[in-house]
Image (cartoon, rainbow over all chains, first blue to last red; front, side):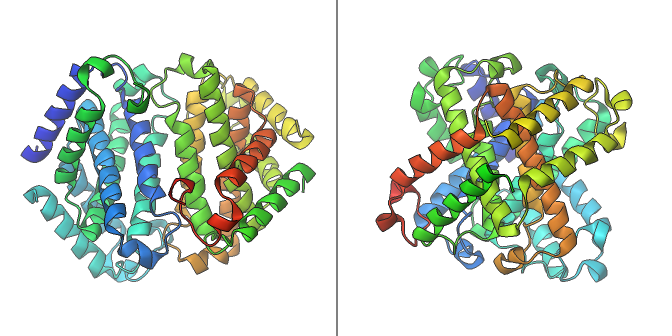
Length: 116
Length: 116
Length: 116
Length: 116
């Protein structure tokens, strides 16, 4: 496990234990919370044009950064509960995606692999 | 930046460049994709009881692990575009949350900080 | 088209026109807003037990009702833009689901039709 | 209650009862399912430009229509469980929004009412 991630997970576990929040942190509830935070992140982009989304005002970027953190923190808590290593899972998925989306067929298209 | 995360981000950037997918990867679109993947993760838990969500069958856990990876990979791509360091943002957020949820008031309750 | 729904859609169209908001209301953005509101609805349930979710306190129920309205209003605006009749689409989907989930095989299980 | 909506809700209640699915349909789980379906709707739009989202190919529009139906059906089931009339709630919300977004201040801007 990547040390920086393990250290975050330990801090989150301590945070929840101190507040007796473990009773709320079932995988089901953590998956809900993750989804809610992803939508709060999305909210910042909903009325922006594609171009506007590339050059966020400083205060929007700070708010987005806080929502990114919320998503990341719930993802790490869910991973800890399910004993999933997010970095390992990520590399495995990149490999899967390389197989699903070969360069020559996927180039320049946003089609799903099943439609390539 | 944590090396394990930087290495993943570099691989994702290469993956997208090779497929000429950067045109699709605006921050707006990446935030949408992240939210869609968070819901695909959530889908695995929607009909489970709290207890069932704690002891997933092996094949469900593998599918959940792949969805966790998808969320993580889009989060990392969004962070790269917006130049947000997710580990730094996470620590900053933990500090903010410690201020919002002091142990003595937050213990054993799932109330929002504004209702404590 | 059901009259009650058409009347709501007309009111929403007038509301947006008066505020010159049609520029923001692309189907893409409306789908994002719908998803964001669905998550705000979800947020009210994230830490509740199954039992607690059945007996909401009055003020929570009022807040949930307002979020239900937000989801419904964006759904109606999206339908208006795409010329989809939500009641027709709903009946069609019930018919499809009846085919996918025959009573004798679907009884008492939350499995997806592809796993039945 | 609008008759077309009541008739749909009755059909959905019968559908769930016949399959003994009421055990799964807690308000918490229905809110999750609604959010998952909203994301499946969103998925169709994630890589489209604003312009492309306005002129969907026929088959995409049919798929979008089916996802719209899924969102609508879970919304109606949640409303039935919580005894919320979605049309009444919608009108109440339009009135609230008219107060929050007066024409003269909201014209041409996508700002949240709290920032107007």
